[in-house]
Length: 252
Figure 1 (spheres, rainbow, N blue to C red):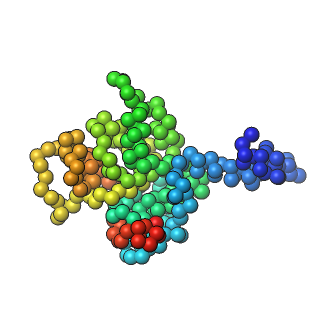
Figure 2: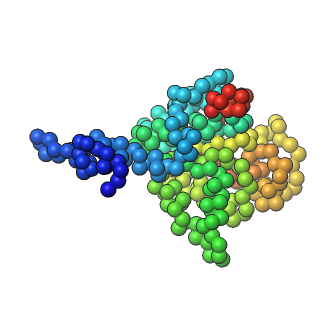
Figure 3: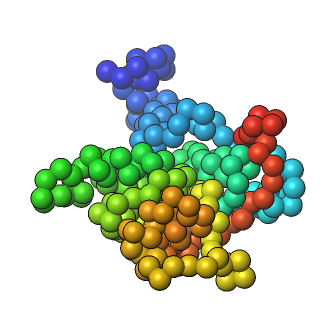
């Protein structure tokens, strides 16, 4: 018997209590399911208690990001679950705080969510194959994605994937959007804007030779234009600018 069930003095671990009209669910059952959803989500301990109310918008960029996050949660609860967000900005401006705060609130509202760090996701993908016939649909990570209403991928582009991993990443993101699973991304890499476009080589942006360059500074150069285009087809970009408050003030 689970510890959650043992600790309830009302139902004695049955999740049911007797009433004059029969039986009904004990209140501890709701808490039990909530704990299971948080366990399923695998949110890092440092972010399990993050909330939108605790986010401190110290400039207009942060204030706008908070406003967009609140609107996203509201619209999600109203059934608009096939859209997403892409938080871009420097280290320490609260991107992961906002992403996990949204995830936490939706989990509390009864939705299933799943948190993945980009580097860890790449490792999970690599571990899922080893022979000539890789089958990424089998591992636990993809099964959890299938069962989720929303998926958060943190630090997008933090590590450059191989061509195989890139294709599997595309499969995951394409599957989520095709099945109406919302996605939230955070990244330290900006999108390549036309006005700030640096001189590019003749190599295709989708080629491993190009995206593996160590001096790549834009998200397209880290994960390819193809993948960025798919993300932007469903996600609203939220640019956050500010100081590294996590380092200087311990805010995030």
